[in-house]
Length: 410
Ligand SMILES: Cc1ncc(COP(=O)(O)O)c(C=O)c1O
Image (cartoon, rainbow, N blue to C red):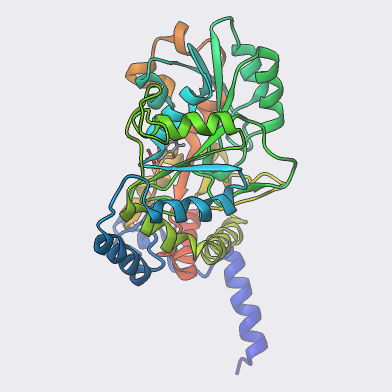
């Protein structure tokens, strides 16, 4: 009879055969795409909201209702800003209603004008936020390993019309901030960061360059406020302009001193932010563990690799993104997505298509002065897999098993 040691060896061999995970899809026809039973009875999705402390949220929002202070820079917003500051390590932090308007406030407060060089490989909000306030997105290419804005490509895109540079810390991968800072200084324009996906990430190298950065607390982000955002800066002047601009151009005495919009966070969103940020470290642990589990589970699957997390930074692992090499995997990203979809695993093509191919930004000579071949390749190859508080390690094993089988039977 097989003892525990033998069983372990056999299990390990099975795991290896199955590409790092125990097989549940043993034949091609076990895959739902080819007629088998879906691996998940219910949808498992990218971006299911995290609600780590429902009771705490209800307690805080109850307090706001009782005090009848629901918006207009209330005590919960102030508390949330203080807690967020501990994470951004920036001197000044202003909570907002979302990151899209926060980006607009931030670039205006930093004096960005005319053309803004930014990646096409980002969520369309980065480009729309600029375009909506009369700035012109000019797209540069990204680094093939990290997916972040490549300073060499930015340098090629600089022209006399350049009025700012917007780096995007895509998937929580921090840009080459020093490289972008060099290009921005040389061009004499402000550098702003779209850190929508990077809350909880920190550079371990010296303080990041850039006049301001913007975080998102949308429902799908690691930390959510239902909807919410934050402008963080070390500049007292930029901060003063952000405070005023995000509140109709008012100053402390409620005189209108400049242009403004309504980008204020409300108390209910701040309550959710406080309740969630109190659990951020635990959440980060969960995300890190799931990322590691995926890495192990996919280690032996040919042609499907996790996008690299850059060295020298702490990472939130809020997105687990694989890159599918169709030659090595025997199937392309879209087919893998369809195979997972049949199993009720809802993945996302983050970020495809590139912004430069979308109708508002298709005018090549205006928006695309430089080669975007890395962007073109990545948009065809990347796929974000489910992670977060609603995903278990066992779910990850089963998703890896489906991916391994999809490649095996491609
Ligand atoms: C890179 C990036 N920029 C901007 C945004 C816009 O954020 P929000 O939904 O808070 O307006 C998002 C959000 O999804 C994003 O991922």
